[in-house]
Length: 102
Image 1 (cartoon, helix red, strand yellow):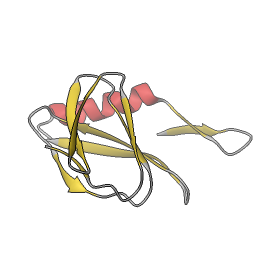
Image 2: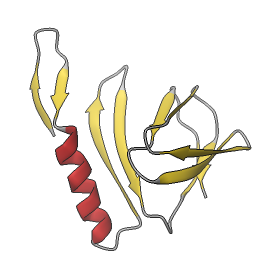
Image 3: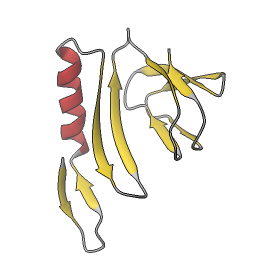
Image 4: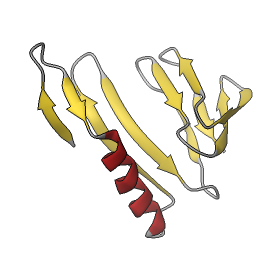
């Protein structure tokens, strides 16, 4: 939910509202949910929320990605290596790296 554009074309987002929206989706028995917050030719920002008892199958993104854990913790597999991320941690991966959340 963009709230406006600045002088240089940047998009401003009420992140707290988006977080609350995905939490509501998860409370309605969804295993995971996603919101595309920004989509341009050069950048895509997607917020993904996953229940503790659910995962994300292995997949590959064309461009670089970041995984930022807002609360809780999660195990992430990237290129066969396991990393545990906690609240406030951020991981970046180059494009083309297979990654998943078991």
